[in-house]
Amino acid sequence: MDSVTGRNVYRSCSPFHPEVPHLVVLICSGLTVTDMEELEEERLCGKWRVACGLYNYNLRDIFTWHLLKTIAMGQVLSMLICGTAVSCEYLAVAGVETPMLQSFLNYALLLIVYTTILCTRKGNRNIVEILKNNWWKYLVMGLADVEANYAVVKAYQFTTLTSIQLLDCFVIPVLMVLSWIFLKTRYRLVHFVAVVVCLLGVGAMVGADIVAGRDQGSSSAVLLGDGLVLLSAALYAVSNVCQEYTVKNLSRTEFLGMMGLFGTIISGIQMAVLEIKAIAAIKWDHHISMLFAVYALCMYALYSLMPVVVKMTSATAVNLSLLTADLFSLFCGIFLFQNTFSTLYIISFVVITVGFIMFNALPTYSALPDSGSNDDEDPADGSVQSSPNHLLSTDRDNQRTEMVTAVAAL
Image 1: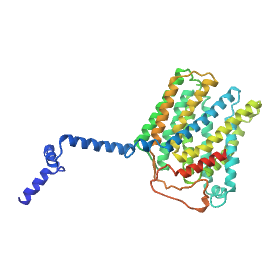
Image 2: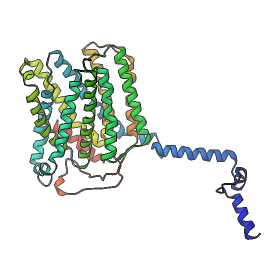
Image 3: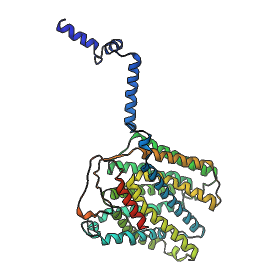
């Protein structure tokens, strides 16, 4: 066989030659049509698994103790928000509408506890060095958080509860975009599907409200109210991105201490300007004082525990878990305010929980280095641990330390 004939035979049997009939390829490779179809199907399924992030994962890898702990702590945060909602409802029934006073009490508690801890810290990360280098960053973070709380409370005066529940979900896509840009978080397809599932659960909850006739609220200026809700969601996203970066790269104590300092200053000034008359008109008694105390303690516990959960997962995952807070408030309303029960509430809770599990079952990736810091380490020693493209889930020992610290602060 000459060299030309040999080359022609090789080309006729090569599966990579574009002009070769499929039958010749199958004969030369020893594969049947069924085998080729199975290989092609396996190749496509493999690409799909990699795109979704499901490659090399089984149920035992997904349903771990870490995931169950994350779900449980997320629901604890939702119940704390439910406590603030119920206390606000009772305050509204008593004719008390002082959102800035209520926020001021929360920030003041954070100031007393965590800012005091920062004042006793020595080294490069003491409060003087923090304020000297990053004061304007924490000012922006505190301003975003205070105004987000105020905007969503004011929105109830202009729009309906249904609009607020729907538009408040705007925080999740904004948060994902900000995390992608600033935290370099990378999501898989399954994470986007999980967000859609959670939003479907919110839709079921809103539908239950409409069926039960709970679409209460003012509609005097719907566009203004809806705009306030969207503004609140965007500001919450900014605050949560700052929180995630701080607790994962610096420390939880620094975040809460700076939030307490600037939040107290900003809310105090705003309260003095807007609510002096409303505060003076309050008829203080044991009942009103207890409601203010319940609200302040629930908010303090929420702010203290939320960074722990954020460090375990991400700010996006935490906000997905908080979607069930409205459901807990509705369940409390059934017993406390004689609201109408609907089966859609249970369906909504299950759907949101399923979406939350889907989001947390597989980790997101980040291009930021891991600082490895926690509250028990002195940031002044300058020691940092870095690893490129690390998973956002942190070391379990550090998570346990963060949890113990949060409980001790409470």
